[in-house]
Amino acid sequence: MSRQRQVPGIENYGFRDGAAQQEQQELGGDSVCSLASSVGRVDVEAEIVDFGNTVFSKAGAGQQTAGAAGRQSYQGRKLKLMSVLQFVHDGVLYAELNEMLMHELAEDGYSGVEIRRTPMRTEIIIRATRTREVLGEKGQRIRELTSAVQKRFGFPEGTVEMFAERVHNRGLSAMAQAESLKFKLLGGLQVRRACYGVIRFVMESGALGVEVIVSGKARVQRAKSMKFKSGFLITTGRPAQMFIEKATRHVMMKQGVLGIRLKIMLPHDPEGKNGPRTPLPDTVTILDPKEDKPITQPAKGADEKAYSAPTLGAPMGGQPRY
Image 1 (cartoon, rainbow, N blue to C red):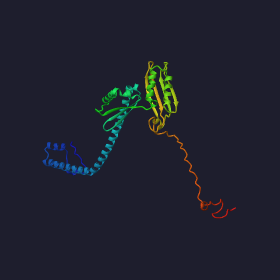
Image 2 (image 1 turned 120 degrees about the vertical axis):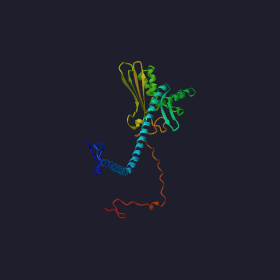
Image 3 (image 1 turned 30 degrees about the horizontal axis):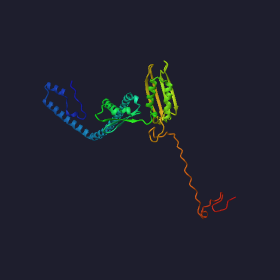
Image 4 (image 1 turned 45 degrees about the vertical axis):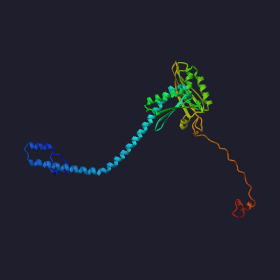
């Protein structure tokens, strides 16, 4: 049984589907019916095409506006994603480079690294207490480090330069003091004596406070944690991020691994060499009072022109009321 396709609004065109037309031809149907069917199909298709063109032409302006807004939003999302990826890439680069230099320059007083990017090249500044050992003889060691970093991180040829910067006060460098404590413990010095020696040196260098925590198997089989503290330390808030310098090291001892965690609270330095330029939020500065100006003598006759205040309880220009 054949089915006739129903198109809304075009029921009177005598349109039949292909299966019905083929069935009619096989049964010897009239050729006029087949011609009418084909003509009706053409007319219906033409009307459908015209209807679709009208609809799409009316929606064209809206589609263009929506397309422009969509492209702008897509560009914004793309730029935001690129910035996030660049931020993650910079963080991974700093972490891996810091770990590499930490193992390579541990005995030379390594105190941190700074990466500066320019349109032409990438500058890597190594902070250390002994810059002569970092540079090497005639700059050979720094060139070897530059070549290793360039090959490891895939920088183009000649776009990476490394510099060595001397730390002004190694007593205020948490990394340098953690490395010093690590080598003291590896040398066999007692934990208590080594920690107090580091604390004394840091406090004499001008720090506001210092804290050293050593955990692990120090002398006995049972692990424990020892804390040594001196001075003033801030642990929360924005000042803790600005004034507190931290360092963590692991000491491979014979009986096990010792963990060292060191915190140093830097002092306020207006020049920014030994500490941050910004003072603590609760800092109160008492200024010196201004110098008193000498009292000048009034001119002659000025007392006659001076205004005399009325007496309490008396009207203006009158006698007091009692």
